[in-house]
Image 1 (cartoon, chains in turn red, cyan):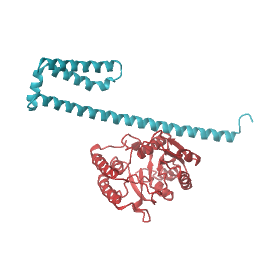
Image 2 (tube, chains in turn green, brown):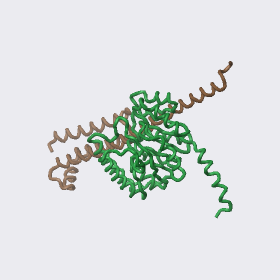
Image 3 (cartoon, chains in turn yellow, red):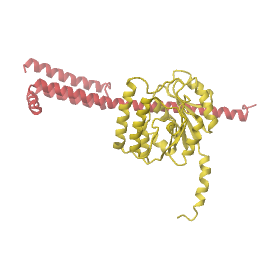
Image 4 (cartoon, each protein chain N blue to C red):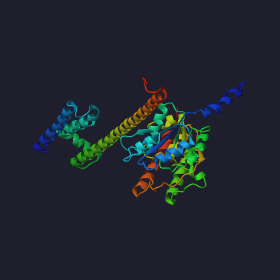
Length: 250
Length: 129
């Protein structure tokens, strides 16, 4: 037992409040909505906002710029995961203490942001789960079955319950940023395998309920015929490799 | 094997080997990617010049004719070199992604530096005014 246990704990909340936060929004062809979404996020949270334009063909970058965001522009389309990772690397280099990430299409309700940030006090990666929130949008049945199945496998690998493995609505501590900035991070869609990897690496993982809305123009990254098949194959491979790799964060 | 066949095989193999060396010499083929090709052309030359080797190999793998042995090893080589290329491509992809991300980060930093300069000028007033 320490002689003065009260001294360090008294400064803890104060330090948590002064946490330097970077909001990361990966965006691809979102010129029509990005301003609105940036403004909505700004209303919820203080901190710098970085839009990562993943090689958009429209005016996403200049719209984001006019909305007052910092803009990092990929010269070509590298993928959703790569766009997130650009944000993580920027955050690490500029000594941010934490990152909040959400999609630029308005699917992630900014009103849920405070809940994610509160989660950072007890976890390194806080995942917003749409399935813990009653009023949230539910994806089509086939996709829900896949998410449930991979969620179960990931939960078993992680040793804790993961209800929404595909959620891109997350808050991430600096320790986890270092883990994410590594080459192990998938460039296309970070998914159940990443969460299982996080939990097994010794980082603390937590889920909080968030509200998600359906994608405004109904597009999904997993539509089509071949894409779902490829997705199932890739996820099975990635999940199968998780226990074989056994990576620890520093 | 007739003498003509043998002469053709030896000449082709040696020509291949020299062509590879010339590509490496002119730096059209990087040393680190040439080793597989050099090994193969050397193997080809050895097989063409020494029929006993191919007969021994045929017996070793249990094939019936020497042609089968040649085809099997030809296929194996193509397989190995494709896998080798896949690893090279994976590495290139990773390097290109790193570069593109770096460019993106630099563009964001330039943005931020510009915004900060603008803020300073506004608060200090225009220089010399």
